[in-house]
Image (cartoon, rainbow, N blue to C red):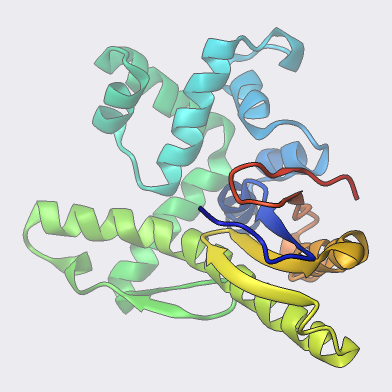
Length: 247
């Protein structure tokens, strides 16, 4: 259904595991930061820590379970939700939950800090200082307060990721404008952590390198704490049949 204009190619750029990388940056958790710095698959790296095995000995099931909790913690998932998503018993989910936070204590401290500070101020902030307010954070009704806490945990991570995409869009546009390339490289769409461009076919590789580098350098070295921001690129004549672009 989505095809490029004649003479152009669709090229998409996708931030790789951006929310988990941002979680590592915001929490400052040393083990999580090291996993990304060393280029280890984050779910494999977390599974190795939680299960106390070497990375080479992590099974598919161990990785699957680590993936559930990796994304679950970003959304304030508790033991009951973890149990449902893992398909395990309550005791297994509790043990896994406790082992995760024992190994990644920086993440645990960060999540508690976010809940405490949001209860004090009524809002969270992204890395760039953008605020989101939570009316229910001090509600006397436990389920309203718990829902606000879950959203508050996620807001700085998801919000920082969203800020990064918007900053990348702005910087790319300014570069294209300076190069007089706005008709050769058209930003069509943002889909969460992905940007979709229509690029004049002979210019694809050169412009893709520029866009990828721009997206990957949105954060300064100090802001990123050394966590690499990684972008993958895919290209094709239609949005369904795009293939990895080697840059």
